[in-house]
Each structure stands twice: as C-alpha cells, then as structure tokens.
Length: 73
Image (cartoon, rainbow, N blue to C red; front, side, top):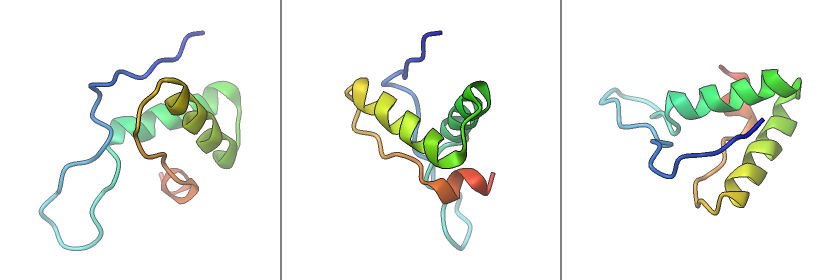
C-alpha cells in the first residue's frame, strides 16, 4: 500500500465566520488520519505518530493533528 500526501492539498481549515474556537484542520486532513487509524488498527496516539512520520518523510512543513482533535471526531 502506498500513502502519499499531495503538497497542494488543503490541510488547514478556512475561517467559518462564527464565534468561538475556529477549526484548525480541514475535514479532509482529519478523514485521512482516521482512515489510516482504521486501516492499520492503531490507537489515536499511534496514528498521530504515523501521520507525523509520513509528513516528515514527504518533506512537508504541515502541522500534525493532535490526539484531542482526532478523538473528538
């Protein structure tokens, strides 16, 4: 199985215009992480580590989702 990240993918969410804490990550980024979690049968914290290592291997400077972002979804 090959996993790659498109450098032109939208990783950050746009401002919603609503009050309160704004979304930090695009839904596609969260969906990607949750898909990898279920494919490999990983807990949330190991999924964060997997995604962080893949982003680093791809040479991208994207921030990594944290544990609390994933487990709230």
